[in-house]
Image (cartoon, rainbow, N blue to C red; front, side):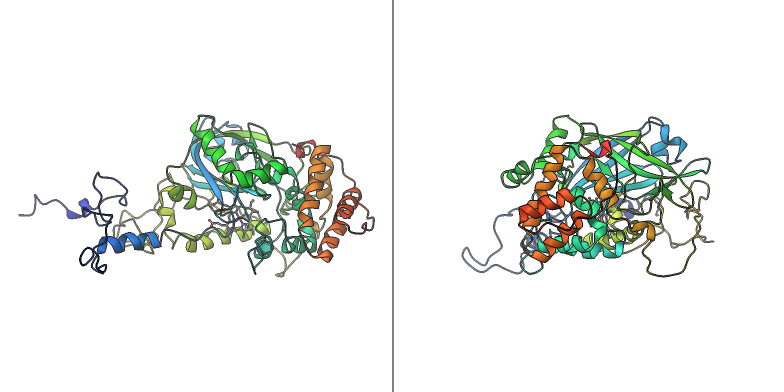
Length: 524
Ligand code: HEM
């Protein structure tokens, strides 16, 4: 008689054990009578190896830390919702952007780049602005920064710039990213960093709050509309509170008095109901084979497209409404990736972007302990998943059936492919000789650095000049300082001369500087 028997497999809990139940237990669910005293032979005798509760408690504690992110280790996150205006339907078929009124859950993580997990929030640095959209068509990650450009043009240089920006290898001093020899050595030798260095020395590098930061996707993406037409776009986040920065003295005081300055501000604002908001915007440019706009190479991540030439069109609002319940589970374990795309959004050949497509999954395999981290609650898509991936470290799903491949003739329940609504790579042509190229159109490194400088208000420019003097003043190598000042002379003679004078260096040789008009959108 087997009819009345229940299936014992139904008793396996569907989700991993959490901290529930009203009794203290071991990890195996056995109730614990005493968690304050180790098992000993006699009141003052040796501790016994037999004490499983002691060993389990200590062992788990010993393994509480996971590697911090190799960059962007210091961060703060929040949950929210994105609401689309619907006007993006003309350029993309991605439903979460295109459907008027559609709401999509989002998790955002803000970060500094160079500091370690315990470093201060208000250091002079770039800020990360990473958003995970849990869309009905799959997860889309927009992994951006609060500057619209980057230091380098090719991913192969990323380890080099980060090695140069992290503390010196011998003593781990100094911790401040921009205040040391290797940073200035790198950027003075890599002229493509000049534009980004302007941003890094400006007030943008010391935001007042995460709530008052802009965000940028940096790279150019390709959008695909329902009618098959495509366009090249840049993503922008515009804070509803406006853009505000600290002044340097405030930033330094906050580093000592409240290293959690930004983290606290974000959490307090959300807790008090002052929900931070950003509008998501697009710069939309024609998708023609040149992949340029007004002479700007759209594949060069050290270049912006000035908003005067191509205005930002707002397409929806992000509102952050809830703090994480648990920092580790959510903010620390969240895993962003530029390859997390949905139909309607495609990548381009920007060589920095292409390298990033490799790097994030690769690092997360180590940081999050194997290939199953998308099963962690914060990383789970809100769309149905049927990926045929199996096994692996920390597998926490119990997959059914014997086939994990398609097509197969054994199992009717296996998923089928869906050519109509799937993500299909847009077929852009590829040609050319294999080689390690430096595109000619990537070679102008000073025009936009000057564009940024001449767009600043007088007080912003004074702050930038002071920052160059302070930060470059920390560089002990006179040759490096002179090289950076000579580079500055190619951007602005007065700035270079003033910095040189303050640093006690000879005035640099005058150089021709690019002729550009200010861009008001670049000033705060
Ligand atoms: C984090 C690599 C450029 C934005 C990271 C991480 C790696 C990485 C390995 C740690 C990820 C993790 O542990 O989960 C690279 C490489 C780059 C590059 C190789 C260039 C080739 C950029 C650029 C941006 C950016 C240009 C901005 C547009 C971020 C952000 C995070 C991050 C926001 C933190 C994500 C989070 O909050 O978890 N990057 N990155 N990165 N990167 Fe990049």
